[in-house]
Image (cartoon, rainbow, N blue to C red; front, side):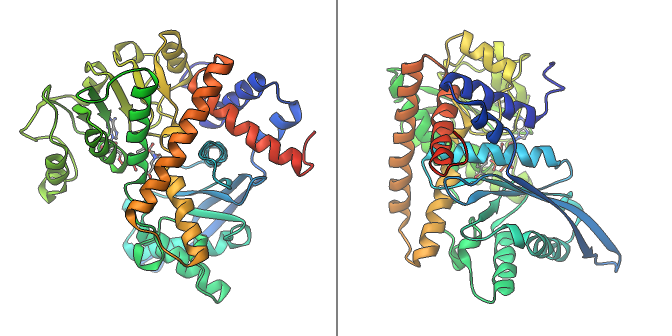
Length: 420
Ligand code: NAD
């Protein structure tokens, strides 16, 4: 099958098959995991500002809940499909399994371009969506969170709607909330902080020194930004960062805090282009920059069969979800590069979502430092466990991560009598 015709659901099914085969798992386990347990499709009526009624299509997929309730974000995008939501919910099962947190996988989405809606319409849509999927979610059933184009403000409306339906304040129904209604400190930084931790561990595992090492990063959104910030704190020299507008390069190292301030200026529209403290190239130059570690933190399918040959870095740490196509992944393995897969590297977000849920349930809140410390311990343990599996079975870190996760889910399904 060509790279272009493979959809994300087929990709995740392939990944499950490879890991099940490597583990010698039963066909029953593969059959249970290759599709979600349930996927609800809802029609969401919204009275628009001009008085017209529009019906939006939405989904909530629960992939597996053998270890605990489903967990996963809600995406607002015009290209959302049921297959995409199903695939993302499966990845969430394995991401939670890798992180060692007691959740299964869930995911939701609405087919909508939110930039065409007013704030009032987005609020109505968000509330109506939660109402529509309320029979299949709950603090012990399936817990939504933000994803593409959904914000803490939207999470607050959803929490409020659900709480009104249940006639009691229920903060543990949603994570990624504003701090004022039970959000967690260090949640905003969590994904990028985790990616930076994984960069640091990848240096250690391959006997490289991170101090002064060149690192390049694709993407300067929430994930890329904090990856750069914390990787620099760990001693790396961030020589290149790209975003949708350009690629910035400075051999002496970019000044990350200055870049944070630069993109925040309203006239710069959250983009890197025009920054004076670096050379500026077109955005795809990022693949050719000489560095010891490269972290794709922008979009899926960023590293393809076409550009993988240009990447010189021996270490690749996946900040984005699904940034490497299966063909490119093969090339990376053949070249003997060390790749930390997305389900481990960007698992910091869901990990701190879990901490948020735990804090909500116990009504006791932790400090920023306590949250980051707990995140570090869990992520470094997961990295080392996966490294051991990689070495024991002589497989890639990606296959090892799926193996660890699938084994945990299969053990739970077996214990509950779902499979033999
Ligand atoms: P974001 O929208 O904040 O940032 C995306 C960045 O990518 C922007 O800087 C944008 O300019 C850049 N970009 C877009 N197209 C590009 C291109 N062709 N070349 C270079 N840069 C490009 O998104 P985010 O929250 O940082 O998420 C990034 C990725 O990480 C996504 O795959 C997302 O699913 C994944 N992820 C995010 C989180 C989270 O907590 N935010 C958690 C896990 C995974």
